[in-house]
Image (cartoon, rainbow, N blue to C red; front, side, top):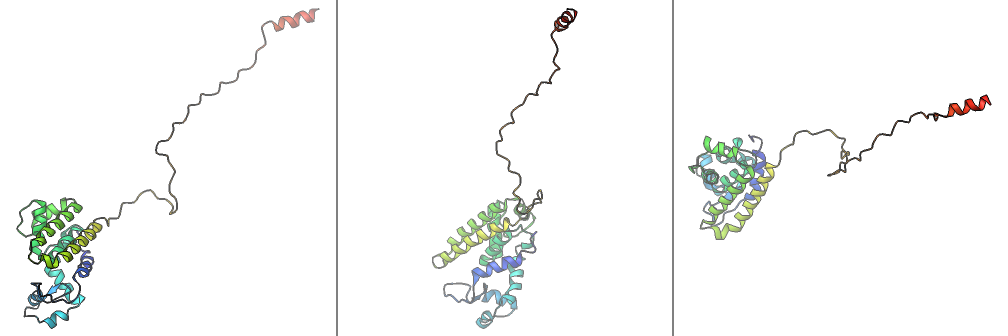
Length: 225
């Protein structure tokens, strides 16, 4: 449904992820462009070093994001906006947790697997409602984490931004064509409640004048005299 949205979603995720960090309170350890040292080790199929993490670039992490997060939540099959909200959630907390958040909002079995029932429910629901619901569930999950006091403000700003950006994606729909007008033509000026046109009675048809009945007798008498 939105196979062309990965590049846009990927760019937005990187805005929130930033560059290289190695915060002592972050259980993910050394991270660069949102990719932790553990994720990179799995991707390389060998233990990654902090130097490997530092060397990551936008081009080298794009395939990781595509395979580990976007494809894991079936981003290509999700409606625009919903795809980004679940994708960013997956990057931050894992694909299974992101899918569970959507499932709990939808009221379907929260097994963390995006099967046909969940997919159908996502497609049939109002996109804006799903985005708000998923983001609300995401915030509830983050507040339960022991690291909330350290990272809570940043997570709140991130989810707020994701909500706004995802909702904007749902509005990127080209409307169908309407009546053609010149670019500067505002169209006819029609009042909201036009006054009814007054009814005009037709003018009477003029009739030819007639002489009084006695006029001929008067003329004949004057001639005889």
